[in-house]
Image (cartoon, rainbow, N blue to C red; front, side, top):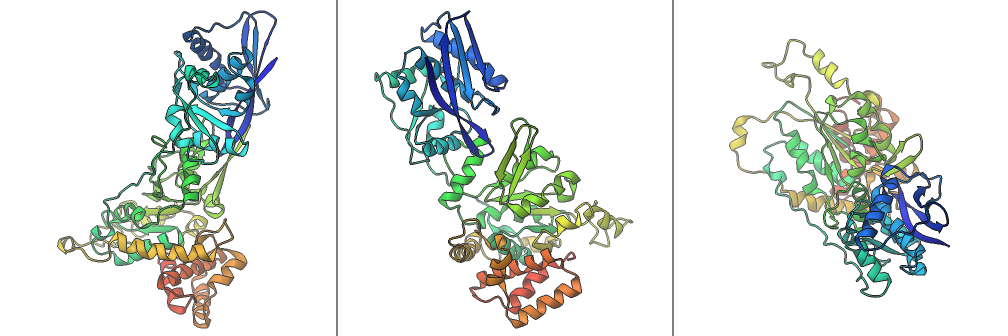
Amino acid sequence: MVARAYTVAFEGVDAKLVEVQCAVSAGLPSFSIVGLPDKAVSEARDRVRAALSAMALALPSRRITINLSPADMPKEGSHFDLPIAMALLAALDVIPTDDVEQTVALGEMSLDGSLVPVIGALPAAMAASQADRALLCPKACGAEAAWVGDTQVLAAGSLADVVRHYTGQSPLAPADPGEVRVDPTARDLRDVKGQERAKRALEIAAAGRHHLLMTGPPGSGKSMMAARMPGILPPMTPAEALETSMIHSLAGLLNEGGISRTRPFREPHHTASMAAIVGGGRGAKPGEISLAHNGVLFMDEFPEFPRTVLETLRQPIETGEVVVARANAHMRYPCKFLLVAAANPCKCGQMTDPALACSRAPNCGADYLGRISGPLMDRFDLRIEVPPVAYTDLDLPDSGDTSAQVAGRVATARAVQTARFEGTPELRCNADAEGQMLEEIATPDAEGRDLLQRAAEKFRLTARGYHRVLRVARTIADLDGSEQVRRPHVAEAASFRLMTGS
């Protein structure tokens, strides 16, 4: 007799259903696992054996074979422990086979039979829902998986709890979803002294999800303003929160099953490797650009990142997804993020101050910012120079709008875009519009078109640069409450792009 249980194998954010088959047959006593298991899966036999022994269940002196189907799909991770144990218990007639086959299970087991939390409970619950099965997981993962409301989620503390549930001794209660976390921020945009033009650029970037590059000397407030970006972004929609949480679940970043509607803010150090930024490593895990999906990726000291890392950003910025290609698998992760980059004008950072600039100016600036290639620079919708703040200005009272006021305007502009792109789920912000859609929503009036054409000729805008100016102009018009893109909107959009070249 062959008993079956079900679990999942992860391919990017997708969870693929895996059938765990167990056969107990005549032959020399053995316990083997086949079906392309990795080291962690192969070691499951020892954990399962010890867990059953802790429950006073002895394995028969027969040949036990576990097959993970489909056999040509690599199986990685310790979450195969629980489904292997369930298939084995069903083959030994300890628990009913039919009930086991109606469940997708995942969980790591300790030697005493207790269940250890694993990553990926949320994508696994999605897969269980699509397969019209219940999900069984460790108790610590129940609150996370229960966010998928159209499937039953059972959370057990140990293998003994699982046995008692399936034998009717003590049924498990369905798990409740964790609380939605609200991440308050004490960083207010009003704390930034001066820099009104930079604040305006932040508002436009947040309203349309436009990529922003800030250049300026050390201490001018670039990092301070970038850190306040989450405070002016609108909360994620339920669909966006679930989408982002699935990625964070695979990375093991969901605490106590709580899903946050605050947009992620990732700020990797400039020494980060390509695998850390783009994704990869063991198991091709998501990188920083995917962890920043639907949020902000802040890259301080932008030119200091390795050239290979910077160049790999070009395609994800355009497509909104990244494919981590390996010899035996291709993992696809979404990565629609708002890139905020900060850079000094040169290596010493004082090129704009004649009293402090080094003897190599202006060549030092060209060499330093030259680390950012032209094609990558072309992908920044907004480029601003952040001047130094005089120490006398630091004693001035707070001025300008608070983060809450700016967030209100951004939310209004985002609501206009949501209504505009209704029916096209792949388009969420003005930054996503292209082709015919861009022409329909962002074609300026006659005066604006004339100004844009003259700017394109004078500053030799690329086709990409031309379209990015149109997208920014559309966002500025949305902030202005205007249905038509007009000359002032085009002028402001072009001014932000032409500060540091076309």
